[in-house]
Length: 151
Image (cartoon, rainbow, N blue to C red; front, top):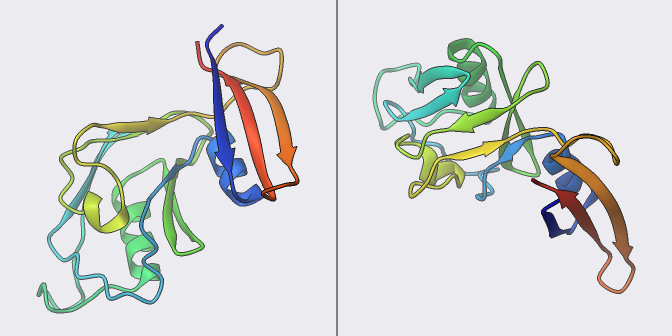
């Protein structure tokens, strides 16, 4: 058993983590997304998304809805959504999702470029790893401590 402790500021953040969502580290709400020609490369499921502006030019930003639509159209089995301005990616059928570090759009959405990132749903307490062990509310900071078995 390999116990890990993580702290989340909101129920949404905690829920996304436990469901196996990859969550970008940059709030892009209200920002112009100049991503034409840039890529997100998925290793699980295997797919490459190449963003394209309606007028093929890097000078035309995409909307959040266009980003979501293009990801889901080009990466079968991947669902995208924006939650509190951050891009969330997850497997449409519950399972593992993995994003390659070499995607040229990674930094814009707050995904790393030094190592591949992946996520998988956690099993219920008592289940096989990875499994949720306990959720501890922290009333002092209005946050949640999550204990998982990642073995």
